[in-house]
Image (cartoon, rainbow over all chains, first blue to last red; front, side):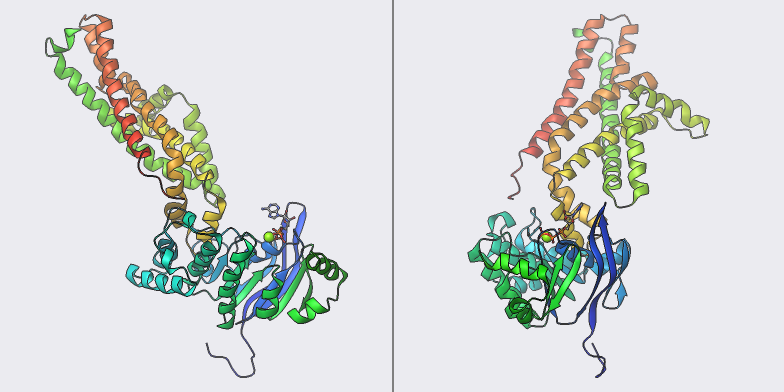
Length: 253
Length: 216
Ligand SMILES: Nc1ncnc2c1ncn2[C@@H]1O[C@H](COP(=O)(O)OP(=O)(O)OP(=O)(O)O)[C@@H](O)[C@H]1O
Ligand SMILES: [Mg+2]
């Protein structure tokens, strides 16, 4: 990771002129976005504005119709093994956790290390236990996902993603399916990651998290990035009417 | 009813029975392997493979089995492929049954939430790894019931091979009838033997279904 002094921080994720349709619906419209190493970007916006789709295109769970996406300087390959290899570098945490239901917590964190990274099982298990310890669910290692609370499951999902040593972590509304008392435990883990310099894209409406951990807030509406700013500036002084309208709705209830 | 134990008929009957078991077992293995492969094609991201599997299934599922036997037994020699009657029967039965295995697997795969495959893919697992490590094991339980119907039908379907020069159980009936035994008695024993085979298959599946459930 050598950087010349004047090149500034390294661009990890670059989207240039990205367009995406679902049938007649233009979900992503000319998206240009550069995320540098160590940056935490929060994506916010009304339902249906394309936040999830944006997240999912970055590791190509959704294909794009136009434009380009590069991860750490390499364009996203079309399909097959190349793509799989690149996906391993981009972790994803889902709203619905998506832990493998037929595997124990420990196996969930071990599986891809062994199958994708070809890590020795013993080494992978040691790493899995360390990660589970770090997210605070080491005691649950031998249980099945269904036996855990939502907050615990989401922390396991984060450990599972971290096990691949990803360059970027994508979070799609990681706390939206959780009871309020569990939201904090997940956000604390995420704050910890942010503080350690993990590059993160987080779709969330958790204002507190955005203010305390994000470097930048993107406001999306109708498939476009309407506004970009620091969290402080965005929340206290939104420029666009769409953002003002949206913020007044989520702040006053 | 005592015909089975007269004139060395038992040896004939036993050989026919064993042949039926062999034929069913070999066809079952082929059907399972081919069925899994076809199911993988059917859900694969490659359009050519999906089309291939769809066409294959429509052909083999909708053609009467007797016609398939005809095609294999008399069609292959035309293109200079000469196989024994037994191998021909395994091919016809296996390919036929594989199309049903594939459809059962596919409906099982559809019961697994999409998020499971997405999580696997987002970790960098290939399509094959996702299918084998994550999706199929979870489809397994939903699949056992319908799969047992497919494999219980297999030994019964194998009776058609008797008409195509395989000396299996059903063909024993012809031999015995020609020797002038009461047709009812002959059928009784043959039916009983098929029942034994099918019941064994059913019992096997029952045991699989009753294994302790995966906690979910
Ligand atoms: N697979 C799909 N097929 C067709 N339309 C889709 C598909 N996925 C999403 N859409 C549509 O695309 C639009 C954007 O969806 P997306 O999930 O990206 O929005 P979002 O901003 O994440 O919304 P939410 O806050 O509700 O999660 C929506 O109108 C949605 O109905
Ligand atoms: Mg969404």
